[in-house]
Image (tube, rainbow, N blue to C red; front, top):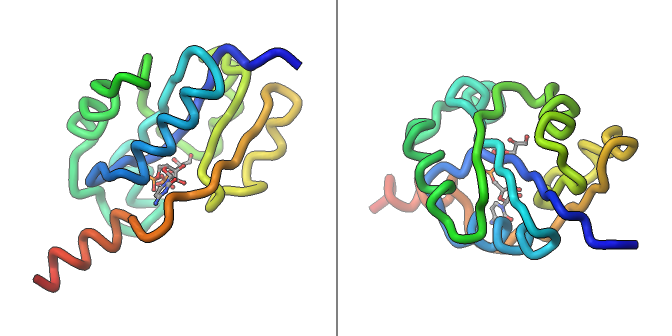
Length: 133
Ligand code: C2G
């Protein structure tokens, strides 16, 4: 099997941290072009019950500035993944393993990889730590 050329991944990337970076670096290493869908503020509110700390424009700017990322776009809906994958001509969809199995239905249009999350770091834990200090 030849290595997939175009990789796509999705996330909120709020209060950007080393777990996010490691996921993006590993996703990029699986192909030679990485597209990242960044959840809109409204989508994050629906997914996690709160608006992100960093607004969409800032989250997009941070992710777009990374050496391993080639392009970013706004992810408005979890249910539009098939369209996003086809529009961006992605060969491989990468997600952290907290999403394992969730997008298997897309197996007819792209390959799928669920990578292990980096332990002991999360946006929620950082927010709680700052709140408690
Ligand atoms: N991640 C990780 N290790 C961590 C924290 C996050 O590998 N310690 C990964 C997640 O598994 C995800 C990516 O980093 O693949 C982005 O994380 P979030 O911003 O929390 O993404 P999420 O809000 O779950 O959005 O369509 C899917 C969603 O938009 C994913």
